[in-house]
Amino acid sequence: MSDASLPRSSRWRRWLLVYLLALGILAGPAYTMYVHYDFSHSLDTRSYLSMARGEFEGVSITRRYRVLVPAVAGAVVWPLEQAYARVWPQRATSEWPLRLAFYVVNMALLAAAGVVLFETCRLYGATPAAAALAVVAVLCSRWAVYTAGLPLVDSLYLLVVALAFYAPRAGSAMALVAVLLLGPQAKESFVFLVPWLLLFGRSALSWPRQLAWLALSGALTLGVRYWIDARIGAPPAESVNNALDHVHNITYSLRRLFSVKGAGEIFSIFGFFWLALLAGSRGLQARQQWLQPLGRAGAGLVAVVLIHMLLSGDLGRMGYLSAPVFAVAFSLILTYKPWLRSAATV
Image 1: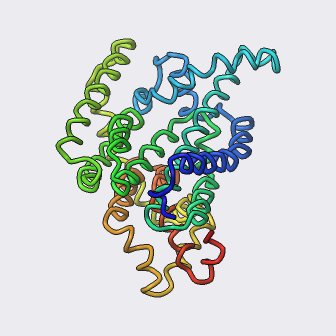
Image 2: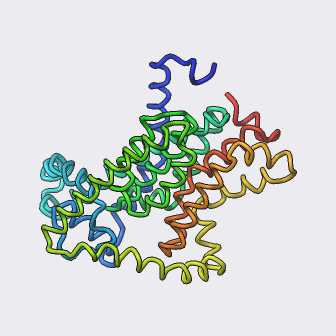
Image 3: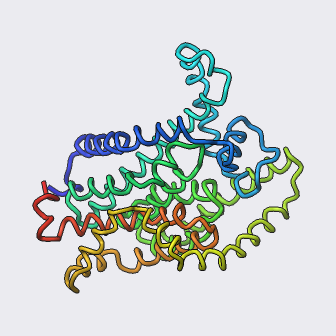
């Protein structure tokens, strides 16, 4: 039975099962990260903790406007503080409850991204078991553990990118609207994803409608920036200067990318799961089984991720945004490889 012909209740049960699978994969390793990570040397995490408390003074302009995840964590922390006061009274007035709030929020967002990846793999023709294993491969990454366990905002941006890759294949206007509204709030580099959306997202939403939603999203983004800048007295031109400064990272990123250390960073994104792509590249017919379905949309998204990597200088963390393309390729290889087919079918 195809996914489209499944009753709504059956689809919801399967999504819930995949969501719980994703939470199960992340919970233990991310909890260890949450408990044992040394925050003293991490500007990123200290910035987002301050933002969750409503404190924007001293926060780097690179992170100052990514308010959604810190705002939700700041809202979630109150009930967690009540539990902390009963279980760990000595920690209730410390940062521990707020760190736990980020852990809960990021876990929920990454698990949602896992469900989107599963559905995307199914839309590309993978079996349910192969799609589920692709979710496992993506969420076993050290970057998933890092993102879920720490006060960071990458979880929301990964969900945005996953929805962006899902929406055209599913023809889902709702998913694409969510991408256009959340993307600019999640990370400023979303601007590099916009041309990809205008080109490949037309099957879900025509480009004039995309531009209309982008205009609304841009207005909301500018409103948030104006509100924050007015609170701390920051000049608007500071944002432009900061964006231009990232161009200087390109030379550094290229040198790092073509070094031994850079190769190690790329390998660490998905680890030994990369070997599946090698197995699926033996022979022209084998390659076509997963490369052809991905097509220009997959190649284009990888190019967008490469731009993120070069401008950021953080090759591994930004490279993890290629998870939707990797998940589809991984699941299709499991689906079509003869010696894996019996293990990847249900």
